[in-house]
Amino acid sequence: MIEARGITVRIGGRTIVAEASFDVAAGGAFGIVGESGSGKSTLLRGLAGLEEASSGQVLVDGAPIPAARRGEFMQMVFQDPYGSLHPRHSVARALGEPVAIRRLGDASARVAAALASVGLDDALRFRYPHQLSGGQRQRVAIARALILSPRLLLLDEPTSALDVLARLEIIELLERLRRERGIALLLVSHDLALVARLAEQVAVMADGRLVERCDAGALRTGAVTHPLTRALVAAGRGFRRGARPVPAAG
Image (cartoon, rainbow, N blue to C red; front, top):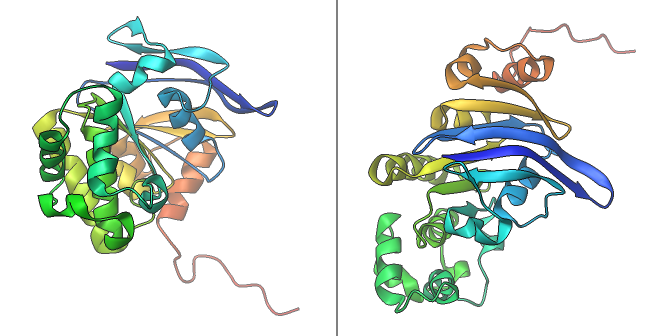
């Protein structure tokens, strides 16, 4: 449904993303994992048109879509919900802004529907970001992304800034949105367990390049081939006492 072909992003003369190609099926979920600094977030920003790609194309249903029109098909949810919401804008203003930009008429009903879709009470429309919990802020950010009815959500580490309970609630919300709306997800994270739960297909990114692609089952079982992917899987299993000898002092 949405296809990236050879996306390359250069910033300050440095190549951050090099020739990234993949596709996301309608209603599907695709995950990109990798170490911090590997280029995952920059790739999402390049797809959304927030960073200018020096080469490559984004296609929707086989037709190339320029950066200026990508907001009609995809919306982004950022890592830090406090930083992505204006501190002096109420929830109603934050959600109403994309409606005003697209000139879609009265925003009130759309705001109420968007809040309901993410499990928030309509009374929260009068609150400001500092009056919300971390989980509520991220739900507002997701509601803002949903208010224009995109076909794809771009998720940049959507649970990393949340506590364990809020994290689980956001995961369950994203799963419900897929079931009920048929919306597709493109998720980037360094958390293999999160990606393996939400995505069917996974790509591994290293130094700006997609170095391996596998299904989520292979990621869970460790049936992967690239050395970085194996290292990520091993790290995701956590510390095991006695797995390595401890060097003697001196």
